[in-house]
Length: 214
Image (tube, rainbow, N blue to C red; front, side, top):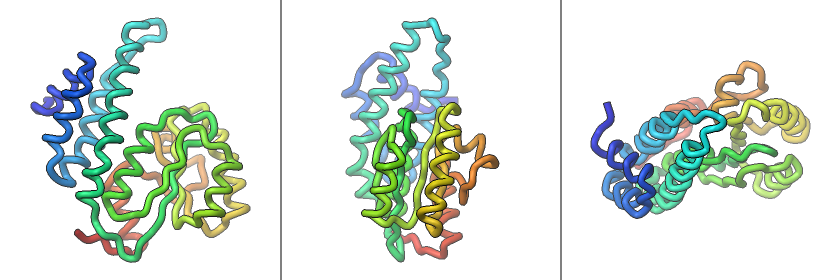
């Protein structure tokens, strides 16, 4: 059963009331826990409930409208991420990217926010990132971890190809997957694991012997 915030937030999205959605988000997310709940529970619950048929233009239009507002709200919540951010010792840097042809990036943006909430330095290089661009970013930034996000199942071949090449050029770099495509097919990919949310980030911190404190 949906709580009051989820009901009001969904109503604002469906009725194209962007200002109301932003106001509700600001009023509701009063600490790290409520912010994570919106990222991991509220947003997926609302967006996954939309099941449009391929020829249902009205439904598809509504889905795009709602997704656009959600992205705006998520990106605008970054000051709250900074306010609720924990300290990670030692400091670690994670690079996040959506591979070439992968345009679903809302989950990757949320993932970048979650990593920052746990104290990681985070670089998100965006959707549709070619291998050449990714390799250059890795050479320049020298991150401690790489997270590759794939939602569309059709992009799994590209992911496998990219991982294989990166293993040759950056053999010591831990590579993690993210997104529905990676989650459902992780057994087919050469990954250290899949990051699906805050619990996986906490597990990574524990595995690496890092300290996360307020």
